[in-house]
Length: 291
Image (cartoon, rainbow, N blue to C red):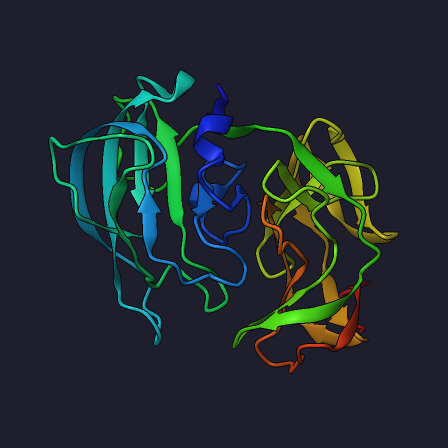
């Protein structure tokens, strides 16, 4: 059973991703990360609820130890009244320090609390809500067990030739001015694969990714600008052993997602490689072992 994420839910957020995570809760696209902030406002702390419903419980949970983040996170469990077919399901929400309590009724868009950074985050990951849905009788505290998700919105695949100019940088990433959103705010877009569909995931710094949208194939090789990325099984991609390069120098990878922002562009993960605003960059994907 796949759960559709309706437009009424996704439209509250600037970006979303089903696969851009190393954690098993996202396996097969069974969780969604919802980003209220833009690429240039990745540390926003607003945490609008994705659903309407009643808070069943909040609790503090362990997070992986990281030198830059606390070893705890927060879980909010909500019994959903909606929107749409989400009614009757249970939502698990992570990465929010809650200001709501057990028994509280929340409306979609109402604040659940404050977004926080925990040891689940790599340093280049922006603040977001991690959300999964499951049947109400399933254990809500286990990471696995959520239902596969299907975006219920149009996602336009954008052609991108792998080049662009750096328009923003953080300590561990750079954002290019391409590809360009054709109609900011009107619909979601993402980097398009050669054969159609929108690429989703961390290439190749997370184990796999996904191909979203109605144009996707059900099997076979997936490529970008003729560079092979991996093999598709239904909508999940098993990345090949590849290296992403920027101007022929290896970087950690590409962050691939769906967005409706006007400042949409390719996000390059590069903790150990300096890129400067105004610099022209050509991105390629090469077989592992050579740059």
